Length: 237
Ligand code: ADP
Ligand code: MG
Image (cartoon, rainbow, N blue to C red):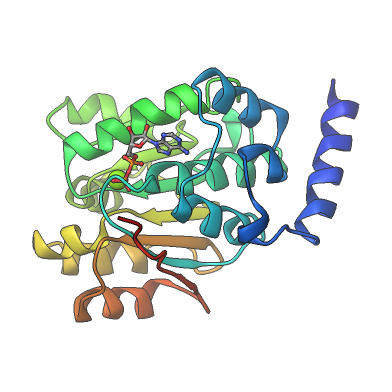
């Protein structure tokens, strides 16, 4: 099983060097994806990527930072969940490796929706995931945090753990997603986001998604992204 996995990882990495153009992507099978992710997509009837998914998944798989702008309902969740699953899979991340990915979402409800989608699409991978959104028992969150591979959280609660929880360790973290960044900023989380980013290892990959490109989003992008690829699909009506 491990030999097969090693061979698949090698093939995927070679395919990243020769990534198809987004305009040539017709189905998710046109992306170099692990069989475990393909299976999760198929079982949930995801076949044709949306425009933001076509344009961002290939770039993210190659390891680029992304500044993506596209409206609500355009499919941003899979545009970052697929790269997270692939990033950790390629690195043979296991449960004992701790926090590998952090997804920051402005509200508990949105975080919960991301969690649900991850549980479906990522069901064949062996990563642990957890919601860190407050409202639950902080003690319970504290004990579990360091064992979770993919954290989905709201800004305030994450920073609280960074400040107060000695068990929380994200020094090996690989990939950060800032989802609905404009809404996070509108809700007054600018300082909190800056505080979080200061606490994260700088050599990570970062994907930032936002419905609009305001000045404060650009400020956050400057602080959090490294030579990002800009992606703003034309909206079809
Ligand atoms: P956004 O975050 O941009 O608002 P979501 O990721 O929540 O959008 O996706 C909106 C809806 O579209 C969800 O119900 C999701 O399941 C569906 N969806 C996303 N990508 C696809 C796809 N490639 N094919 C079919 N449905 C999709
Ligand atoms: Mg969304």
